[in-house]
Image 1: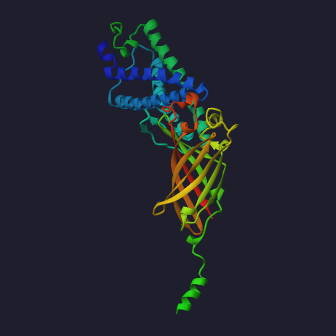
Image 2 (image 1 turned 90 degrees about the vertical axis):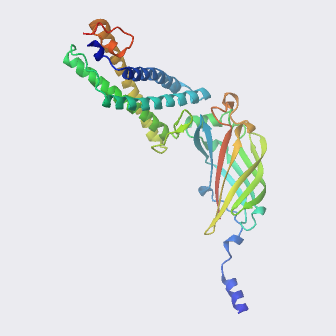
Image 3 (image 1 turned 135 degrees about the vertical axis):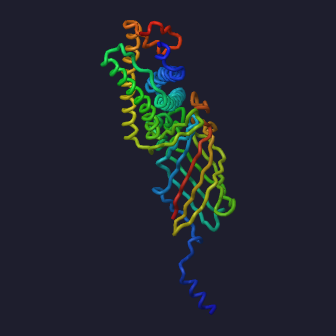
Length: 184
Length: 181
């Protein structure tokens, strides 16, 4: 029974790949934002954009995957409000992982810099250069990222609480190497 | 009959192509450039320049051009970039406020296509440059459109850490558009 409750390997792969990308892209964005203009700043900005485009593509793959596969139900042992909260956080995370790269892409266009994925594949500029709009999108990108940070903290906090306090196997369902025998 | 044609010819306005154009309409003219940063083309312009151009479309070989660019008027895409490129590593406008192009010769390449050869001076360095361009006459107005590629490092533009051409490419495309009356 516990086996069926675990996520599929593909879902786990997508989840952890996304986690890894976020944990790299986020600090790169913070660091480059504070740097004065230099060749290294331009390099980091490009890497940040390439990572962001990868997140954008990956979140769409995840959404397609989720729409075409029955997600594992949340543990029935958890109270209703917790299941609602978990579900809400998941929906918001998907929304942010879609809207954050999108706002970055649009911001880049508005500031007059096209995004060229991996320096090879040019993404279309969906909007023309516009300083006011560029600054507004930069502010939006920041607010969305702060929200993402808070949600990820609660997402991780909840999974650790389930693992170490409730000991209900919630975390194990997403980790291929954790023993799931403790799952209720 | 012969006299009739002579009279008609005298009455006709002087055909535009016989005229020499020398009044540059600065507000309709532009000098722009495209640099490549991390494989991304980034557009910029020089907002202030003066241009002394004399050209007769029926005898373009006698044309002359002298262009002076106020380098501090650069718009490289963002305020941060403008501060950087007017500084010491790039144009060093405090010491070299102007760039200059003076033509030596103009030759016809075929059709409306021509090529100006001349000397470009930036940051105290003078290099021979060839600038292909197209002439187009339209209702008493002459349009000159052309572009050429300049290697920034030959002039010492973007030295030091900016010399890394994998970040900012050596080749910069210069695009010019002059409207003359």
